[in-house]
Image 1 (cartoon, one colour):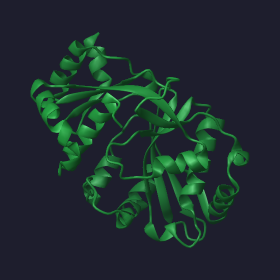
Image 2 (tube, rainbow, N blue to C red; image 1 turned 60 degrees about the vertical axis):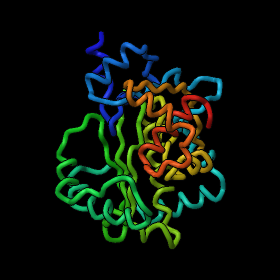
Image 3 (cartoon, rainbow, N blue to C red; image 1 turned 30 degrees about the horizontal axis):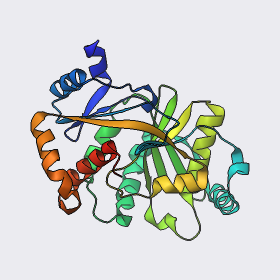
Image 4 (spheres, rainbow, N blue to C red; image 1 turned 180 degrees about the horizontal axis):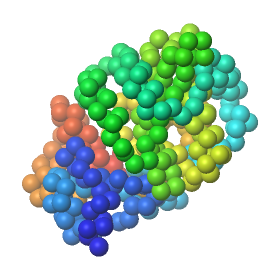
Length: 273
């Protein structure tokens, strides 16, 4: 039994997280958490369960589980989607197109970011990642109708009845001058996965501990995404548990972004934020 559970979790930034659809995760006992930390050499386990519980909690996933076409959109959002569809072809794209143009989009996208905790991949590492046959991975592209330029792309993972909108990148110059590539991209992907593929829901992930992006509020405001509340619990190795206990009262003064992010997750698990 433990072997099966271990396969459902992966190591991620010194922690251990669930690697399947969030609605499948169950509550873990301390014994199983300890075994997972040993197996994956992690310092803590992040366990979220009771997916889409009716009672609001301090942690959630942002999901959409129905599609109402243009009728569900506000007037301004509807107009921006239509403008995007006028300028761009928006559709699933091949890995070959990603190899040809994807890295230029990826690199250009960082121009609009401030300081980022993520390291920018070199072209060779980017292409190496594309060569990996990751289960359920799909790419969508926003393509300029005039010259075939890949303007933006989404990297999605479809698994166990849902689809995770994992990564979104866009050429910075297309974010102005009324192109609205993301409006068209989200509309077409929502239509495809929810109306044509009839999956349970699409998601843009859980509540973030770094608060670097406003994508979650954007999706709820413009595309009728909603919060699916879950319970979150963190289990630590002994020494980290002591450190968290000591540093928690000082969490707003911690300079390290990674330590601050972990303490923010701890605050969520306690229901303090």
